Length: 185
Image 1 (spheres, rainbow, N blue to C red):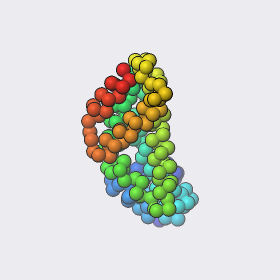
Image 2 (spheres, helix red, strand yellow):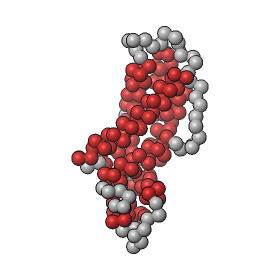
Image 3 (tube, rainbow, N blue to C red):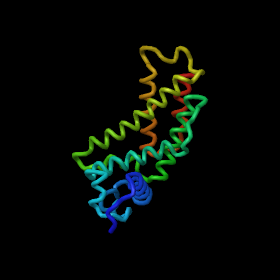
């Protein structure tokens, strides 16, 4: 077996392929080494532990889900952005079956915090993006937000409902988009 891996990126590309084909739970040092055609020990040059490998694979899949097109987006409205985000996650769920609901269970008991941190990082990224679009939407009512309901609280509520819909297999965003529109326009 070859003991030289061309790059960390090549290893992560193989991880994405494994997740697409067999699911995130199939990521381990042996399966990735076999897919890369290298000795297991070679992977330790890039990933000191299985948790580090799984963490990098999870990050890579999240990155792929939200950067599929590679082009920046300009949204006409907050609800347009919400629809795009929902569609992106649905496409990601189709491309990586079970990933959205199962990636945190792929970490060993002691490494659950790492999995949660990775998920929170990407969820935080999504929330910041939604907040940015909300701030730039010129059609938001002047009185939509106040001390009783801040923009940040609104985003947190919408995002919680959004993730709940995805976890429950809902494929129609219209009710949530309508609630959001009635609140802010």
